[in-house]
Length: 381
Image (cartoon, rainbow, N blue to C red):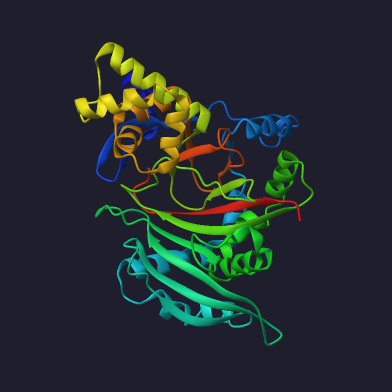
């Protein structure tokens, strides 16, 4: 190989290692994805369980490289079918309820679920449709008011990301942790609509690792969500804490995502250090006005006040600074809080306690929409 060919090959490798972070109309710079995962441990090594248990207790995300990769081929038909469902809903060709009344869905559903039609919550602009079911066993109803809610992930016009969320009862009001029976049947409903869900539930290595990490003999996957993250889309920094749940497991099925993930106490430290540095150097992101700067300085003088404000998910200045400024996103990446996921990768996100809860943010970094699974973890019986 000539010197020129070597230089061209090296340039090609460097370029393929770069991903541009764009989300909801904001350009947040470039990430070198190869470097972000360099410190991850091998999930097959003997020291993995103890290391992961320590990371979990500290609220740190745990990346399991390629854990489900070997099983992807088994579900290729189901994955392709799910993408067709996603495209059909994007094109508004049919309602989701109508699609599920046809093959292959009707054959999966008819033995265990009775369709009750669909509804739309006019007060929720992100909702597309909620499809309703009762679970049937031996001709009797065994679980009522199960549903699959189809929603946009954001309000941005260029974000085609969709979310299929499975649960039951009155959304956001009912204590889902208290009704394990309906949680169980809502999980079975997910399997019926998206059989590739078994990439999480039937992967023995994942189940064993989670049992070891949580010191539990039994793991259940509940409150399930199937995502299609699209270019220019993804979730802002948030947590998924809910009573009775230990955390969340995320599995990348197709496409690529890039994550920022860190414990809440560390997010508070990073925000405080970043804002104080901006103040001392007088080098603020251009989009932060003097009023915004003053608000951020006020919040970062007291970690309790900042923690409380984070929990409101309502402070527009804080939301913008954390999620829509290149400088802060790159600050988190530089300090080692980035994760790059490709098909077959699994990410564990502890969510048990307030300050040791793993906050996370997602970017679609591929050129096409990618499918992923996100299930809550319940330990014990």
